[in-house]
Amino acid sequence: MGVETKNILIVGVGGQGIISATDILAQVLVSTEYDVKVSEAHGMSQGGGSVNTMVRFGNKVYSPVIEKGQADYMLAFEKLEALRWSNFLKPGSTVIMNDEIIKPLPVLLGKAKYPDDIEERIRRRVTNLVTIDAGNLAESVGSRRAANIVLLACLATFMPVPKDVWYACIERRVPPKAVEVSKSAFDMGYEFL
Image (cartoon, rainbow, N blue to C red):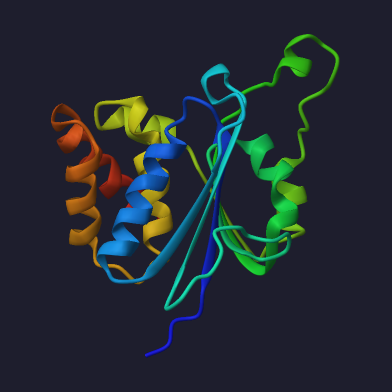
């Protein structure tokens, strides 16, 4: 059975749990015997700077890099980052976007304006845009920090992987004290769609 290579772009700002979400996603895909390649660009991840990861999976993947216009999925932890990376989306792609605004320094300093038409601009590029308030959903199950798991679970609904495989990888990746909250956050995101 041939599985064509799929491309997932994950974007946001430092401190949002992007690297953890990417690690879980990669572990899930590897455990289901896909060939997986991951590329990470941290930028100023500790200082709230732009962070992106690229995950490619299929029968045989030769490069971790997604070219512009080739992403099948974008998991956006912050709205402006979704817009910034939208030129990587292919026609017919799916965007799962956190309804969160983290203003960059130029906006905070009054030197730039945060766009108020991000969703409209992204909708012009894609057929499927899902906007979710992951922070509030995560908070409702015990920890706003689990917003990354809520977002990952939304993406999981599009992946050819059973839910129990996701749970097993979450158990291996998150600290023991956060496992139950993370599983609840996963359920919230999984059932959102």
